[in-house]
Length: 237
Length: 237
Image 1 (spheres, rainbow over the protein chains, first blue to last red):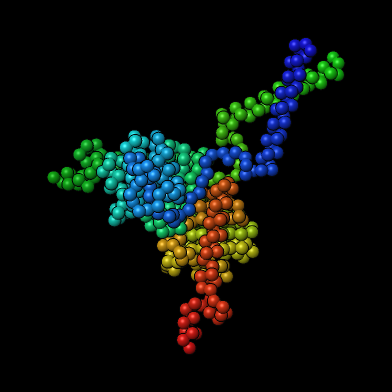
Image 2: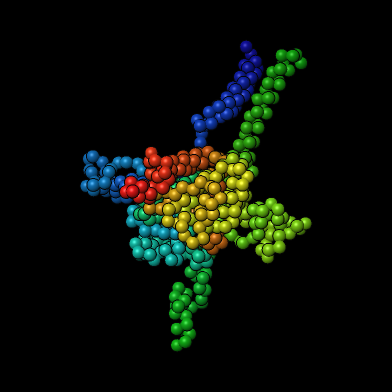
């Protein structure tokens, strides 16, 4: 067989293989949609959840393993909707944008502080009224240097979503409170579907910008820039 | 050119075209992801929304068009997140499974009643405390014959989701109240992505079954089957 004939044979074989693969792939997707590639991450979590030890996630020095067990009486090593939520949050390596109505869960607060300690850029938007309720973790986050803004233009900033690394959306009915996690019927949807993530990124940025204290209380005086309630006093002196 | 040569030429041309189409398609998806097929419905709505007239959606006899205008002073003919929400709900032709914490919006109540009037099978699960607050529409729905169950096993039934025709999920932070729609920062996510819809269908069915009054108060007496508070009276007579 000449070189030319061999090349032609190879060309025809490649054509046959390409068409076969295309059609088999189409047929596979039609017949077994469940087994086809799922595309971007999609996960749904329901609450309330069983209370388990999460020290192995929040404190890497305390292992919940047999070799170095955590001494607490809670069940260890179980995967629950709450451990999944923590894992999704702790997967952040660049940024965490959090927009949450009520935030009083100490474990979720520890997760956010842990991320900040790792150098993840954390931004938080919350509700002006619920950020001061008993047990709120907003003060703890602010004391740790995390930038928190509160929405002033609405009756309530009722969102409960987070965007991890600008690509993973965590959203649902669940406020970041112990009651929500352990006692309420709640849902959380986690997805990396760009068409769903992008609008939430835009919403976060818009809320972040519109609730910038510097924009809210513009002033040329450095003294009164962040302390608008002092402006009247200063001007009346 | 012989027949054999012609066939080979055609084969090679087909191969070249197939590969070119594959690569152009890949390149197109990479360069213009917005224009590629999106797959199942995915939509995100943010609130608060501008208040507009929705009579043309809720009352087909009153048209908001120039030919037969609605006389109310609200803006007409605008598409808002709320009109989109109504359109998604009113697209139901078979069933509406609604699982909502607080339900006091009269317009959403009218939409549900409209669906029931059209023969759509409506099921509602709500919260035991919030179903009796002032302005709650749950009584109105029950009086109209819609089957409503309230969750008893949790501190709060805090979900806010609906499944339309067993395939379209509407979920988010938004309770079905006027404040949520007109005054709060809220989100709603609408999708027909099966991996996201299926878990919510299962959750609804599980809550529906576990809150069946007949299961909660089992009785062999027809008299006391739905009236458990009468059981003691009957037995003490």
